[in-house]
Length: 246
Image 1: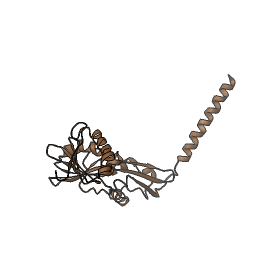
Image 2: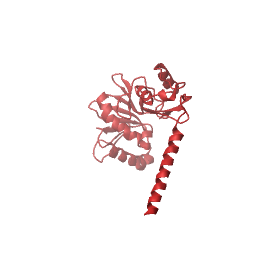
Image 3: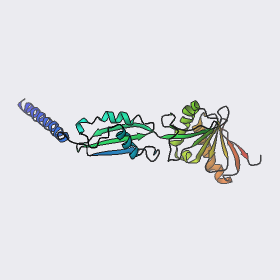
Image 4: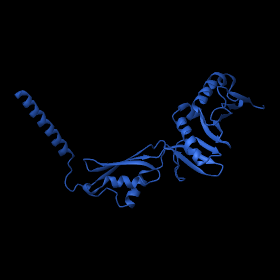
């Protein structure tokens, strides 16, 4: 019994010591001034919309740029709130470091596809299925959707198809353009091969494209990629090919 009490007291003292050590380690000197901002912008390979100078300028304009201010008076939630108002920022996380710096991590909105329709509209659909502002400039390749593209169709059906393409390395590299016909039938323009892929409705697209991939491997690799002008995947398990001149 005495041994158990002794072990309990030792364990309690160790816990108290660790709590005190962590508290002292994280304690900042009174009046500590922020001396630097560590700014990390995520998704620069796929987006590249938001720059370091832009974030700095935005915070300076609002009068809340942290450098030179007392750390205890800097409200990280205020920084997050103001940066999250930016139309090209998805979310922001800000926190203070023991050394007196403010770390800001910015996640940008990532475009899935670009729409350039018959109405002359030009915009991106992002990774959440919402329309990005027209001033967004994407540095990464994104498939282009043309033709009879309504915004509702782009934000729902084309968005889902764009996510599928982005998550599939083969088709993301192969498909260059999505063309929407009247009635929302869809054609695809590939990067390799001088043919048009007719999907029909955006239904069972994964299965349709899987059949086409097998056809590519077993047929086109033998007869040549430019033999057909049109490859239709519209019906069931069929692949209907049209030769040039037919």
